[in-house]
Amino acid sequence: MQSFKRILVVIEHDKVNKSNFAVQRGVELAKKDNASLTLMTVIPHPKKLVADLAGVISEEELIDKFKNMRESELSALADTFRDEIAVQTVTSVGREFIETIRQVVLGDHDLLIKMARVEETGFDSSDFHLMRKCPQPVWLVKSRKTKPKKLLAAIDLSLEKEQEGKQLNARIMDLSLSLASAYSADIEILSCWSIYGESSLRSGGFFRFSDEQMNDLINKEEQANLQKQNDFIARYTDTNIIGHVRKGDPTIVIPEFVNSNEVDILVMGTVARTGIPGLLIGNTSETILNKMSTSVLTLKPVDFQSIVT
Image (tube, rainbow, N blue to C red; front, top):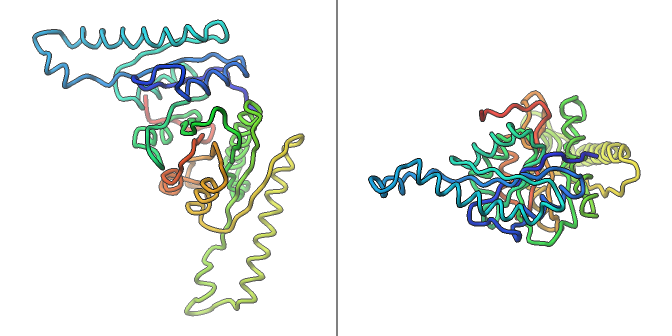
């Protein structure tokens, strides 16, 4: 089970307060794991304001005033937690996702938490940049519940054939178990499966399977995936994990399951090399995430290298 050591919470400049759910989650985990907590805010470069105030105040002076104001707000917020955890603050100027990822790398953080931008479903472009490019797990908080009560880990059983895929599935479970333990939450896993070329096998122009053959094939594949998932769950002793195996396209099955089963956090992988078949990657993962009305925690293979420097 993974424990966190250096947690980074990114706070939008107008949400620097204790009621920020990302701050609450960060403080809770820092207490549980005896981790350090860094509170960060990123100030967009005030280009228009600099132009409007040309001749009145220099660009450097204006940026310094914004930074001092935000640093004061962050410091006041951090002071409310200093007796309980080790906490520090960082203020930066620039594009939020770029400055955030730089801080993740420079500060050697092992978890990034941030309130998701306000969207009924899905996530905005800046949040997607973080999920695509941040080398460490990204927890985008949407839920307004006091604490999460149910976590769902999306486990692609086909990845168990490859070492990198097995490692990613293991990391997904480690993070899920860690969060479930922190919040005394229930943990469930969902795995999807399908039969390659099913429609062609049913109605191909040159050959086709009979209904009896297709039903037999489907039943065998379903039982095989149930067994794979049972074997996977069996690795995690002394846990109470509920498994679900569903036939169908993950871009349809996963959002439907999440949105109809009161899931508070979806934990899933987002990126891998194309040599691993079936991994949620690119458009597939983004299609799923764009249908989410809940919080998500996304992660990548351990050797992922961010393009942000």
